[in-house]
Length: 329
Ligand SMILES: Nc1ncnc2c1ncn2[C@@H]1O[C@H](COP(=O)(O)OP(=O)(O)OP(=O)(O)O)[C@@H](O)[C@H]1O
Ligand SMILES: [Mg+2]
Image: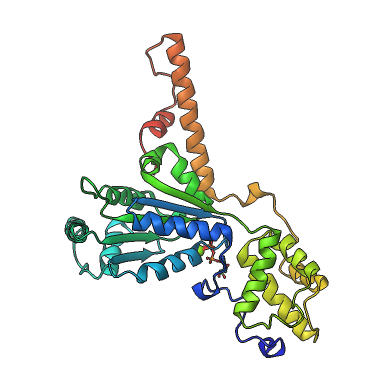
């Protein structure tokens, strides 16, 4: 309906992370290059984090598009971390095209090891890509860490790409996961777009959708300013606002989107209501925070104990000792 009205061939703000719609902002380009080179140069662990809706999954799909161009690359792509360790391994093997059903964890690891060694001997690239990695359970993260140990004297046999929301950063920065942290060779972040990038993003997506560059702009500069205000530069929100605004402009038979339309759409989407960030903090990150604080307290206690010359550890709450020395996850 509105596509014909605005003379567009596609929906410009579709929410599917489709590489065809990729707008190469500086940050997205840098992150894609870091991912691609990290994988192709066998760096081992590569991590990308970013707020909800900044384009992480789209970035991964662009990476897959690039990797598919090389015949010597095989990858397993997973986006569901809620599996048992055996299911996790079964999933990876199946994605690599190896038989996995009914096999024990030991058999799965053996098969995977053989597969990786055979590919490594031919200098081929094998990648495990995990989207939504912030949802990985502690058990699966431990499996990931163990898989990262699969290496020869001069090469990493499995490249691991972890992509997730900022909670993943907090998890990887925690004392408990320092073993994984030390293995990360490339770590990059996606951040929201700035005002100028938001403008270029909207224009580029309209162009990809077939908007005539010689016609009057569909969004006035003031309207784009409002989109930036309410979306805070988050691409998914930009898409949602812009699409709803096009529909509203079409319903009013207006030739373009005005700032008033954006304000009213943002209100309908309740984007004018801002929660204090603390109330939005997920439980998982609070947990990480608690353990980090406890570890810091234990460090402090140890320092105090040493400076007092005392040998005893009595007085340290049992759970604090555990959090310092044993991974809680
Ligand atoms: N650089 C970009 N070019 C074009 N579209 C983009 C870009 N970045 C993000 N988008 C669009 O923004 C929307 C959200 O992107 P995506 O789903 O990749 O975000 P995400 O970071 O994976 O979000 P989540 O944390 O919820 O998984 C999609 O419609 C995607 O196409
Ligand atoms: Mg995603």
